[in-house]
Image 1 (cartoon, rainbow, N blue to C red):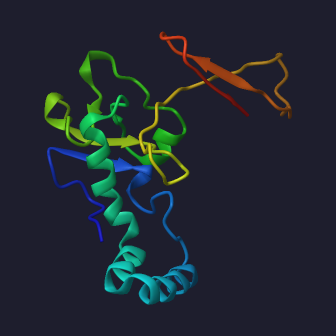
Image 2: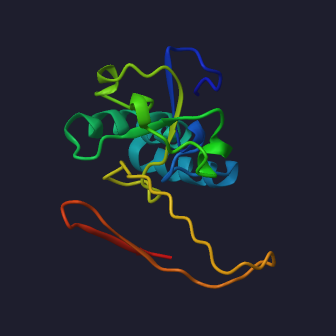
Length: 161
């Protein structure tokens, strides 16, 4: 229900612009959900089942109005490059804000961001890149790393694994 090609001065692609967190991903799971939703919520339930990802735009926009989280989006050539952390640079005002505050930025082009992967409020996320280098071997090493992030207000996020 969306348009995959860039058509505006600024195009935002939360979570790559396709399936959104909290929405059914397979046709079978959508059909099962639509049957249940149709029985309990009528046509509104059916519409939400098949247009769930598209309807997330309303949730994102509504939350962006008064959120402490800015829905910061990063300019990038593709979602793959974005998820590989190759585009997390906001220097010189390159980044944009998705939602209500979009006009506050002069950014132009395609922008990517990740939302809460649980599919529930708050939807907005902050993005961090953590790089770890251990040793000088070229062989792959396996293990677990726990990361805790503390922001400038001393709020702690994590630990993440």
